[in-house]
Length: 230
Image (cartoon, rainbow, N blue to C red; front, side, top):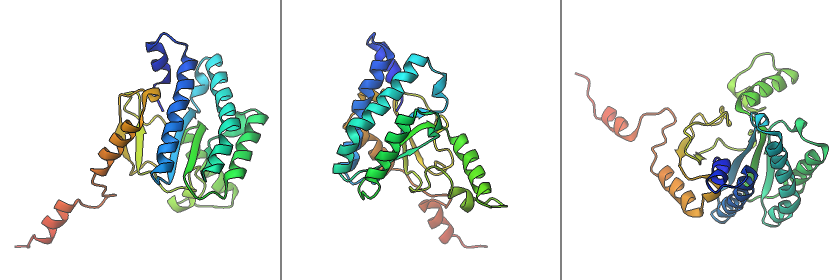
């Protein structure tokens, strides 16, 4: 969800107001997924690198996260949405950690959309942390199957589609293990301006992709079947 700060700058507003406006786009996207039977939505809210930002902005982001949990979780539960958080929560205040845990507990049996928020999350940290957890659990040798069990997003299928707003063309350390065969979609639209029509555009683009997962494409398969060795 990129572009909050630039959205605010274009309007000569403080960066924090861009984050507040970005929260409205979050609500719209959650509602869209809920209404259209999309089962998993993962939002990159705060990366492990974001601690390098000015302390005032970091404090505002964490306070906004806390306020959102206090105000939105009951609505999520009412709409059968399961809430999950991935990332290292140990740096958060005790109150914020308690709110996260309570939100997960309250919604854990819901069977609709799984809404996952990545906060204080980094893809490299995720892989290293998974390796440590596997070792602590007694695994002497690591394999893809073993490591996958300890990754933060292990409760969800690998993402089908990654949408990045704001015009940057990179994944910025986001679930790098899980994105190995994910389709990538980049848009110049800044996150606070991301509307339902933009979500539809991303899904339309995705629907035209040929997802091969390492296999040959349809044209190559037909050519191979009709090729006769001399």
